[in-house]
Image 1 (spheres, rainbow, N blue to C red):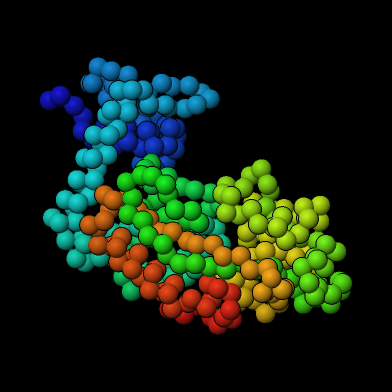
Image 2: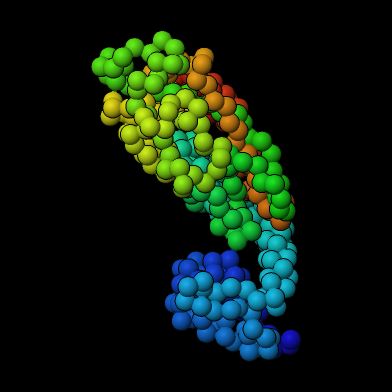
Length: 307
């Protein structure tokens, strides 16, 4: 072990998380041949096979690789904490944060909020990943995740961020040109917009079938932002988050008392990061701003985002 290349463990960690040499190279900022060479060197130094390699599945950890990964992740956590204490990063609130959030919330709430946070703490840089899927904090795809489902397991610090409401929306033009909607039964005469069913990443997003017959859905997308812009074309109705739709005067909430869906956002990060002050500062900032915008999250306020 005296001859072990400790720097090579960084390469091992990224390949273990991405399962691809090319993806690991991109994250490390090196050529993919460098990553492959470092992995071979590490396996030689440890005299064991760390990955099963195939073109279809990529680099899959062996039993020995899984054992090593647990130790290397502990080392990484200790290094994070050591850097905070030794360099004073936590006191000066500098460094980098990567935040993953659901697509609509990530674009409409987290993005402007992050820019305001960065203005307050100019030595912190941020990546915002508004993606219509779950991300892996274990693989360090992000530092903080905001999702519509609470993680059932994992070494996470997790808390409920807020509730939010979804309602059925249509444009004023649509309502003028289509049969009146006085009761929920009237929706049978109208067209809807929804998700691509087989590609829905969470059962929390299965709600349109409770409002409109599936046969009346004329447009589907995996993206809530695509659904939002499709609705704005005035050809169909869509169930949208209030924090998106209530801010657009073109959209009208339809039967808000009858068609009112409540969901929750959960915010969490790996427990190894709980002592990193820029992480807790960002989470506190998000929570305080979202609390001030409770009306917007419920779709009852048309005011601009309040910081």
